[in-house]
Length: 170
Ligand SMILES: C[S@@+](CC[C@H](N)C(=O)[O-])C[C@H]1O[C@@H](n2cnc3c(N)ncnc32)[C@H](O)[C@@H]1O
Image (cartoon, rainbow, N blue to C red; front, side):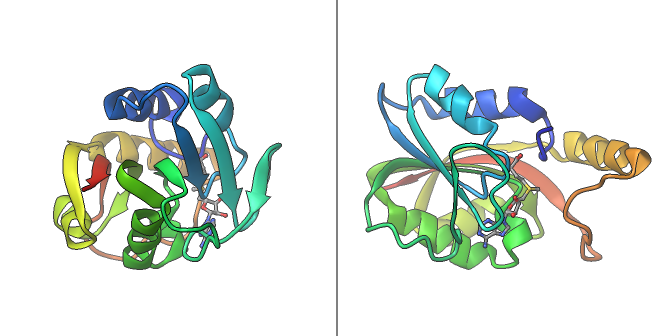
């Protein structure tokens, strides 16, 4: 089961909007069960995934805040619903920026408590796309609560929003 709003459809949309070149190397950080990996491969990418608690085939153990990969290793970094869970969005953005080659793209869908475009710009990215998915996030969260398997426990009090954003390392 995907653990982000919009499921596979939203992952596909992120990848399509990013218009990655054929064979692009993509690292999913916070990949969980690794459900993005077959989709990325089917869409022509070379995909790998890390998670601090890997739960699926092909996902390696790793910390998205300190991945250990050399700078400029990837054409794209994908992350869905994991920067927020890591508890340190700014460090997550900094590490994603470091991992990308110049011109590389960050494909992000996540919960935000600040304006996402400003956050990305603050980390050095040009913002190519920013779509508000808060309505889908609320629906997803309510359904998960109803089923009794809401992910990632606590949402701090305050105005949360959920965004699909694509940034480019210029
Ligand atoms: C809500 S789940 C989303 C999983 C997957 N991206 C998906 O959409 O199905 C959040 C994931 O982030 C991972 N995570 C949180 N902090 C992390 C960190 N510092 N490094 C690596 N993974 C982390 C968790 O282990 C969890 O698998």
